[in-house]
Length: 386
Ligand SMILES: Cc1ncc(COP(=O)(O)O)c(C=O)c1O
Image 1: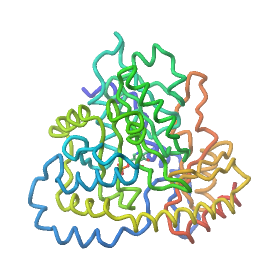
Image 2: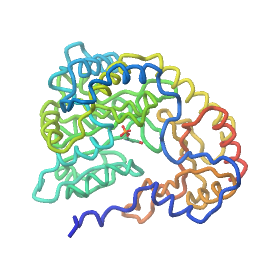
Image 3: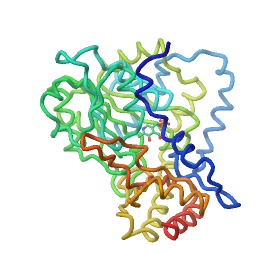
């Protein structure tokens, strides 16, 4: 009765965590959820005001390609942030609003995957560990997921069959950042082998020292050409509003227009009051700077408390610690039982490769999404318990 491909999906990581911790009583007192990357920094105050001021717009169906003001704000932001040539992006052809990047990262597989490529089921390249939506999107669209850490190392026959490749930079969960050279190589490979390069940049504004480069920057440096590339951005992490469900995609006009057609059938168009608020948020950097400083202070604290242990590394981007604790599930259970701290076992964010080893198994992912005091207390407890 149901779609056979659903059987290929394991339960979502947070459901697996619930099952793992079910029946384990945390100690009395407050619990701290560090398993989910849900920013708890306060939302920019202008948000509520703009939503209220535009309340009359809730009664209108929003256009699925958004408003000129939104698309223009996005183009101006991308141009400033990634140092793009002034005329590189056109708000009419290169940008679309999306209801957060999750649905867009899922739907891109439906846009990009033909029935066959090179005579076979199309391959979808993804990192490992990875954001689970990439895998779900691949298998639900009859793609064959192939884990590759570095595209240039993928076998030529795989690249010939590849229809879509996901890159996540800064990467969830490791917090690593792809260099501009790596992005350029990925772009060139996508063009050479005729696949769509989907670059998930939703953590691009949460960084430690240097602003991470982006794939549109790679395109600009390779020439005045956006072919084969689409990037994904979101206000969820940048502006600490994961509940707003507002992001955008930008890139190759052929992909954007195919995406717009698909979204007209099955996408959730962003409501007009949300588009107006999002326009203002993309135009403001002050709230992003202060949020970034707070993340930095938490990472400084993490380094003081955990430095030299658990293979601690400061994440160059994102707000995740990726700690090698030997056995992520055991550690997650101990932290919940002894301290009421919820962290995610790394195994739930990865899959066993051909060598049957799940590269996430020894790790836990700790999301530094709370205020500084709560974070310091929790990190100290993590240190003491593990
Ligand atoms: C790597 C990555 N991509 C995309 C998303 C989706 O975020 P949103 O749909 O809120 O933009 C997340 C959320 O946790 C994420 O970690």
